[in-house]
Amino acid sequence: MTETYIHGIGMTRFGTLPEFTMKQLLLDACSEAIIDAGRPKIDAVFVGNFLGGSISNQEILGAIVANDLGLGYIPSAKVEGACASGGIALRQGILGILSGEYDTVLVAGVEKMKHATTANVTQGINAAMDTNSNEKHAGLTFPGFFGVLANRYFYETGATKEHLARVALKNRENGVNNPLAQFQKPTSLEEIMNARMITDPLGLFDCSPMTDGAAAVVLSRKKSPIHIRSTAQVSGPTQMQDAQNLLSIPAIGESGRIAYEKAGVGPEDIDVVEIHDCFSMTEIIAIEELGFFSRLEGWKAVEEGRTKVTGDKPVNTSGGLLSRGHPIGATGIAQIYQLVRQLRGNAANQVNNPRLALAQNLGGTGSYSTVHILERV
Image (tube, rainbow, N blue to C red):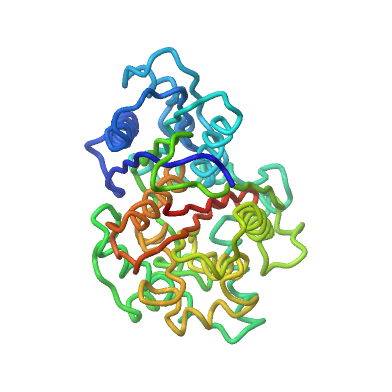
């Protein structure tokens, strides 16, 4: 177990935010987290970000935070790990405290995406694949990859496109009740099923959107009611052709196994979950990889409503990437924001008296995965 605690959280609204620059979003979230923590002295800053250089022409985000918030001459860094940038930044902050180097660390994540064209954002996101591979040269995209997984999953199980739609509907219902979520307009199973196809069988509602937004947390070795019980990070295959099983993302499973072992708990002990639903299919695979449901049976749990707020294993009560939104660098920190709110008892879609919470953040097609287990003490 780590001797690291969360003292403050901050998050901007997610969505299309033309009135805010990336810098403004980042500073707003960081300021909120510092105020929530009681304005402690910050010893270091880590910022998760993926596309700042490629589509916003802005790097040095850690130094910008330290300078503009008047934090002094402290270490800072930007952390990149594709869509897991936020989760990896959080882990770096935790490790800095565990090493004895820092007492209190500010960790943030940010992305500004909506100002750029879809083509430019897509090109930037594709850098999260192995761009010097036959798969990339053949035109494989992220929707294509997870579409293949979905079709294979249908072949191996009794799942259908309706089960994917039920994941998207559940997360939209959660997003409607989250004032910070990108999508707050109610939808229906019929609308999701009949939406524009992106790549068979994934329709528009099955794919996470482009998003602007930022989130931040303040960590400290000083005790607080929210304890980070464990942290884990794993790398996995970077190409589909290297997968031993198309229906397994081993980085998710292994990072979960390590996190459970470090925390001294199992999947049955977790009360509320935020996982990386970049696509509806990813959520089903992740709930299996993390041991919440048996292999090839996650679709049954979805069908039975077990992952809803009212179910026995609530997943993505924030709305997840599909509805809360996916500002890439901020996603892993936004998961922590939601879980801290759940453990404090004042979250959107609050579950009943949670004690243990788990966040899983994925990068690439399974190139990175982080898992963090939080505990209310």
